[in-house]
Image (cartoon, rainbow, N blue to C red; front, side, top):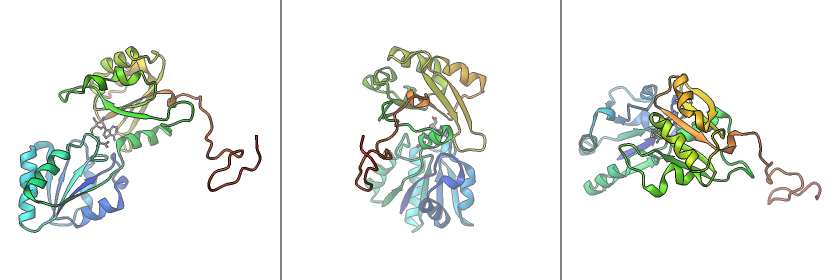
Length: 253
Ligand code: SAH
């Protein structure tokens, strides 16, 4: 059995209990060494075989899984954050299907949740934005034109931009071309939940400068939108004048 496990955003105790138990019990771990905190490998039992996938191809990863399976041993494939985002798990699962090898996927805390926590922020503020766009700039992996940052920026909603720290001039330009004001609030969160975490608040037009000033070149998320500002409406759910399924209004307006 192969267990795809979301490692969480960095801090070793932000993996799920289920993920940690699997790490403790498994015979083989293949971890995404470029981003997974190596402290998570401390959960492994003595004698566990450990591979860093940063230096491996998909074929090599599958070969390790295949061999473990043939020997009746369990494998944990440890991906950063939650594996459903930019995790390249589908291509592994399709090959495992073809080989008739069983697998399961254990969700993790994504770095976009880690970044919100680092900012003490709520992405979905009433009357500000009720939607979060998770996207990236095109790099070696292309992004369809209809999903460009410029196109999404037209919605003026909360945006979380992955994998783009090296392209901040372009990110700023696209955001502004899409309609964000140059002084609209933005933030960069570097290594959310790691001990070396950095939180930098800036504006849409100063993203590249803010990253340079703080020596941030990778492993960061770019956050953009009115949720970083001070204006919003309070929630209906906790408003005394509203009746909900669980609570009677204390007075009416
Ligand atoms: N599956 C992961 C994302 C993998 S893509 C998740 O759910 O978080 C890798 C990108 O994620 C990095 O380039 C960076 O943009 C972002 N990232 C991963 N961990 C991060 C962290 N702790 N803090 C900020 N950004 C992070």
